[in-house]
Image (cartoon, rainbow, N blue to C red; front, side, top):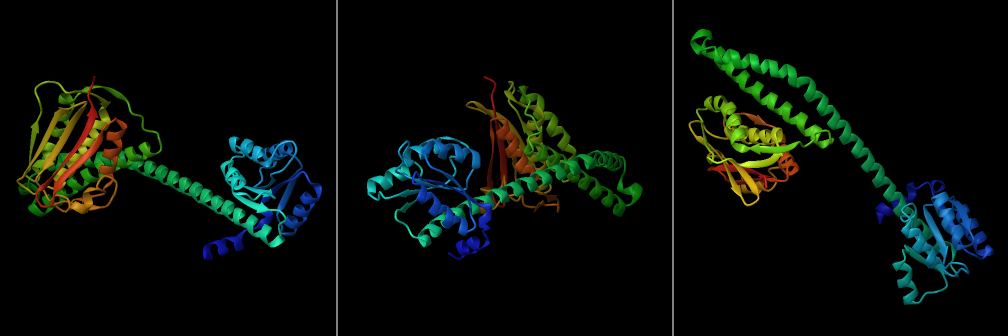
Length: 380
């Protein structure tokens, strides 16, 4: 009640227009005087056809509509207005001397928001009008807030996209240089402390590059600028190449990657880059959350109409209360070596899998490990 009173007190009545429809001129004049005195804008009509024309032309915020009119009844006018996309959302208060249950039920069926029984007094009129105007005002506020939110989200996604795009290229160069330095340097050459710093910088450059890549793809997906380009693919041609890239990263924690693929082709219909992105994120997370000297199994097989790709680790696992929201929570998590994750990767994985007609899944036991998998449609 407090909220309604606050909203009513903030309503500027002069911003709201009311259409009065009655074939009796004296009734129209009386209502016009009463509502004009209450600071509302007022327009009028004296028959059903004129009421429909005025509703389309004036776009009132509320219609006071007499039921008993000679050419068209108020009920018939309401039916026409509610079928028109331009007028269907305008609330209607029926003015009527009819107050039988059948009349009320019929009125609500054709779109009544309220009834005002003749003869009415000023206080009741104003109260019922303000109830409907308050609902209109609340709807306006919600629409305005939704528009502002959409604009904010759009601007945020554009900003993220620009940041990711502008930073990704220089970050790729830094990453490549650090990869080369670490690969061609030994602790004996530069000293253990400097080598440890170089190794840490190399790992962090990998993380930042992956984050920027995910961020760029995610913003493009959110803003509709990322197209799904499906083609016939053999997972035997894709998965081993992605695993090879992560062999060196896994080796830094002495983690063994075990690839289990069938000898026969697994033909799917999907976007090549999106499939690789999902698998890269799953592998990166598995390495991040696995202890040293452990193993990670990567497997692919056919299940019904889908191919299923799984990445199974023996790491820290996931708490049971987090499994249900793991693909959309977006929280920061930390790996066994202190590696920081943004949570964005898993959201991207689910988005990409679903865009290709599949989905993402997780099974996990805290302290024992996790299996992340995704499905994509098989070629028919």
